[in-house]
Length: 205
Length: 205
DNA sequence: GACTTTTTCGACGTACTGTCGAGAAGCAAC
DNA sequence: GTTGCTTCTCGACAGTACGTCGAAAAAGTC
Image 1 (spheres, helix red, strand yellow):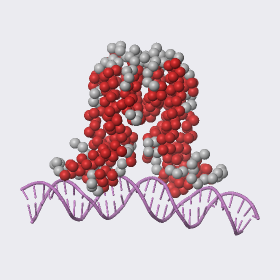
Image 2 (cartoon, rainbow over the protein chains, first blue to last red):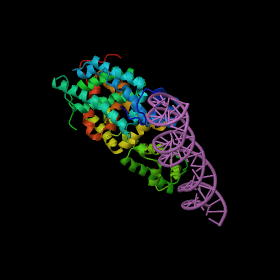
Image 3 (cartoon, chains in turn purple, brown, yellow, blue):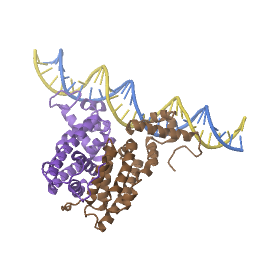
Image 4 (tube, rainbow over the protein chains, first blue to last red):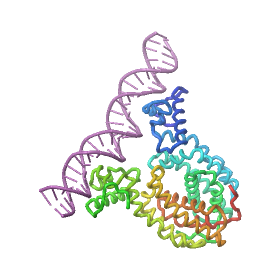
């Protein structure tokens, strides 16, 4: 499943070590940013030597990928009603954003660290691009439906607009000290981006 | 003026070295991200040893700060008409965003590198916060004026909304392969964020 | 040409990363 | 209970990059 270097299989002692490393990473990420965490600390937390760490993971990034793997499912959680719906459904959008904000509150350092390290680290870049594409795809489709139904004004190409909304979410939640506090305003702003019209159509660029 | 370690004064040979280091940094930044540039390369480009580099700059970050210092003036250029104006003035906004997009096109690696390194690097964090605050202050004031004049709908607190717009700009321009291409859509989207109303007022969060 | 300031650099110490190979520990089966 | 396998451990090593120090060369001044 994952790309572990040495392990074969079996629920042995090594599994506990692997979990200990992941748990140590979680604990440390609650205290300081990813960039400040060294492999020494990860190994020490799991009570093994630094060399032994490499028996379980190829690098610090591999640990991050494993942690991300564990929360990837939560990233889109509660977004279904919003993304599969139609029209300016503030309640559904709020539900999706609240869920996302909670994830950022709990896993902010992990997500921020992963996004920061993504350029110059293929596996993380791939994860980020995948997450983004998944969201953009569904949101762009929603935009097309709404426009076809006359529920949303014309404007930027659906995929571009969806990308901008994704950018805004990520940047805002990553920068917020209390992500949940931002949800109400994000709902307002995203709905305006999608449905807001004020008589001035965009001029071609 | 700046925090150079060894230099006293005088337009001597050292000044050429300093310029050579800055120029080397510019050249390298045109080719690869900041994180991939080492002090060895900077020194080699200026034809001095690595040790000598430290006579001119305290660190790689000090070079970045010097480069940023050189373009800080351009960051707000052409934003005046928009920020000091009133109402949904698409032309003025387009002017401001075009100017900004050109800066990102030319100095994208520098800006992206600086923003990426800002967490965990006080001088860069200070620069970033200063730039952001300058923009947010003026934009928030504009929002207040527009709302007082009944030109803009109520919504998120002016400073919050301004912050979201700043986040969006930065994230979008940083991620774009061709920033200028994005200007038209950014104009539309920012105007919607500020003026877009569609009968659904934001619910308190 | 003595004196000061500016500039240069090699040598050193530090921090972190990743690899290698020897071998200990755990767990069969005989 | 010792042979033989896999799992696991670690010390030693090599590499890269950073930043400091002090000796001394180069440049500038009188």
